[in-house]
Image 1 (tube, rainbow, N blue to C red):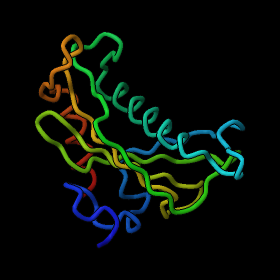
Image 2: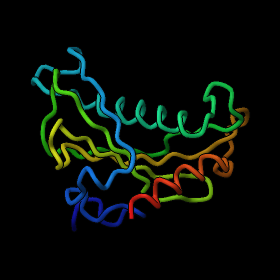
Image 3: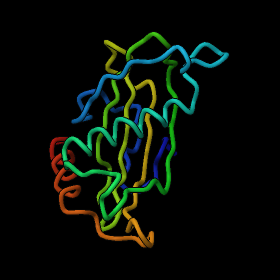
Length: 157
């Protein structure tokens, strides 16, 4: 079985993905504190990068104010596969692509790339479910979010 095979909507083997497979890419700076005692980025930092880049992109593209919107995108499932080390002070390019769009959820994939590299250093999956801010029951994807994720998906070719 290849990595991620059987995960609905996911790329059969993410190691085949390249930078060009991610329509949204943001460069992030690493910090001294991101490295762990092994001299590379701590595993938790990868999830912080996913969260920060995804939210910055969605806020920029949708105009939604996450602090006051009626619905919230909450993470229901996440994973990360590590293929090569990343470390401070190296800048990292974080790519975002849409793997699956449902009625109430979106599965995003992330590709982390070392500066000047086209092959994945890490691949993340992130299933985000939309819920009502007050009662936390699932709700339909907001129309503006659906437009943005469908546009990203279409840009994947």
